[in-house]
Length: 235
Image 1 (cartoon, rainbow, N blue to C red):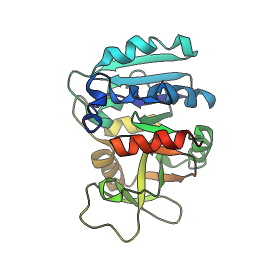
Image 2 (cartoon, helix red, strand yellow; image 1 turned 90 degrees about the horizontal axis):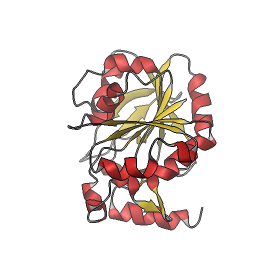
Image 3 (cartoon, rainbow, N blue to C red; image 1 turned 60 degrees about the vertical axis):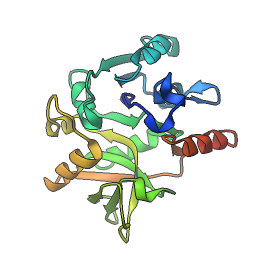
């Protein structure tokens, strides 16, 4: 298995912390968030990583190199212009070998990736699956409508002036089949949540949610970053 970690964003909401380092390098308990990602995936058998870069790329490549110090292999792709969350997937088309994980670099995760992958395998018609759940900030979260089998029915894009009657938050951790690549245009800025998922749902493809109580926290604002650090001390 491979894991693609999205690390190209500027992290403007975390300034001044991100004036000198990219968002995935902000420290959690003295260790870069991206290092936590690599270690957590490795616990569940993932040893090959694909990382996209844009803002202050040397801060990441100088720290991690080829990944050998962590017993993993890392392949980087620099984006002179941001390609978006789905465009980053397409940019790794030659490196992606089969089913793969994807996570946003500004999520702190203690997810059991083995259980997520097993759940995906139990849905042989699925082209993808993502973690869904509750959120304490629904107005600025992408939301999904699902059926009783956790199959996606509709995407409600953020931001929201009013919330749907029934929803689950989309929590930015995915597992995809490589066939997803055929639905992503080449060399174009393209987003997973706002473009790719609505497109595949409109085509009748099967995409599912996965619920878990494993710890996941978006650290993209100073308030959420502070809360994550506080939570880490209790975990």
